[in-house]
Length: 337
Image (cartoon, rainbow, N blue to C red; front, side, top):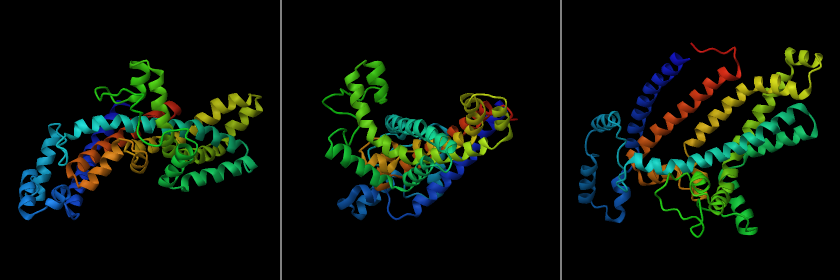
């Protein structure tokens, strides 16, 4: 197992090298640069030349790439050309917001998707199964930006039940920016303030529902297919012939064997969401990684885009590594060597 983990981590190196090279070349082929985006109406030839010299954009691409990689080897992810804040500092401040949103969305997807898929599989071709199938198709097909705006109007503007933007209410949550930025954890565990926790939770509901709809639909469909496949296996029929209860068969034979494809899709969806949900974070003014990278793309902030993409690629690979390791726990027949 240890050799497998080390080998997977070593494979991360060529992946990041290839991604970094692609990003540097691709970004420099696009029209514009951080200087033209930031200077705006003050974009004179003299100001542009001075800005590009200061940022090192006047040098050949290969030299910029080697300098950037040299900084990475020393743990330096670079500095934003827009606000002069280091990428490491900005990412550390933004990632907790994305993490809380991702965990909440996946909690909804797993908590509803798996039971829904199991129930649909055990009632194959019934009215409930047809309803679950249609609902999952709608969940996959509906655009997030439309669903987010619909939720905002319905629960925020019309019913006035939930807030439509931000992570907390300034009148309720006394956030000073000096904490970990994990607002749920801080309000409940550190501050022991239920009012603050309830306020943060209320702000989290709508974006989590909007973001979790597609993973929920995907998890439900994969669960239904996996459970149907397992239910047709000989060992399930043998267990029924032995007189085992339905609950024992479901727990020990059906769900455990069906969890392999389900855990795969959960890992993939989690890795993708941790990369920042750009549309959801923009709609709900959620100050996470997706919002940060979107603004960097608008400002053509090359360093932020490059370093942010490398960080997210690393997170995605690590999440999938954890899923692969979990296979050995779910199925003892799987061995990594």
